[in-house]
Length: 122
Image (tube, rainbow, N blue to C red):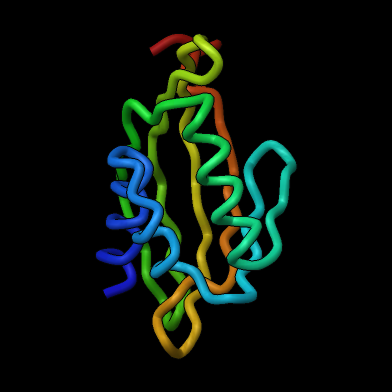
């Protein structure tokens, strides 16, 4: 169930579905982005989603794998977007905690470069 909710949330970014975002997070949720910003409470999360989508477009947000335990989900994914005319992408991981109503109460993102090298060869 948590994986399905998380997948719908990522799809909401691709489809710009703000009501899905509203339904995904608890009223007092905390959302920590991988590069520093933190949004506290559903009103801030909704504002960020709206403002971000005025300047950007998510082009891809694909899940590579998901791990569920108790009320926590860990998902590894690839994200690609166009923001202020610049296209960029990166790998990432989300750790999300769900409350008893199956809404996300805390979400933390972590980023990794999409391009990898093999310094010691294949």
